[in-house]
Length: 170
Image (tube, rainbow, N blue to C red; front, top):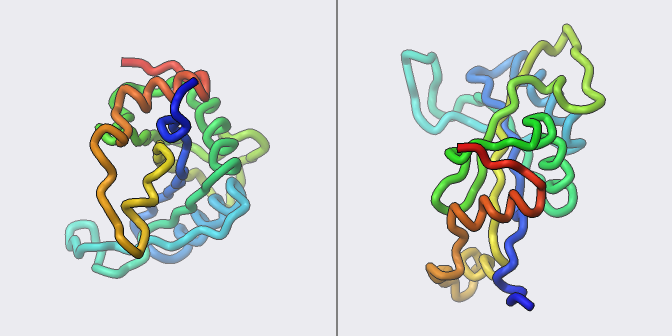
């Protein structure tokens, strides 16, 4: 039997739609996220000013929803089925997180194209962790997570293959 503190799990799934501007398109993107996740999206703001793109610091440019627990796993299963249960190897970072995109929200089951909303793609980021990461985030006596307890890229790939029946493509 394996050590229960070494068993990985999906910590959270963040669904992000970057619009690049405030206003009507941002409201439509929020509507899409609410329809997909049944949660209220959080508006994300620009961290820097970029004159070429017409973006100022603090300007609303996108929205995101963070899913945790069973809801996160169910959403991830739906999102991976859209990608035909195939994820590229470069989608995993060295810390064992997974990121991929979906080009159209209507690919999700039960979603129909609405001409009022238009087409929105989204980025999906998955954080895979082991139990015990609270040590680094707690308020009293926070500590670093030891190197041997952190997720590696290979372990995350193996976890996603096993748990979600996903083919990792080179």
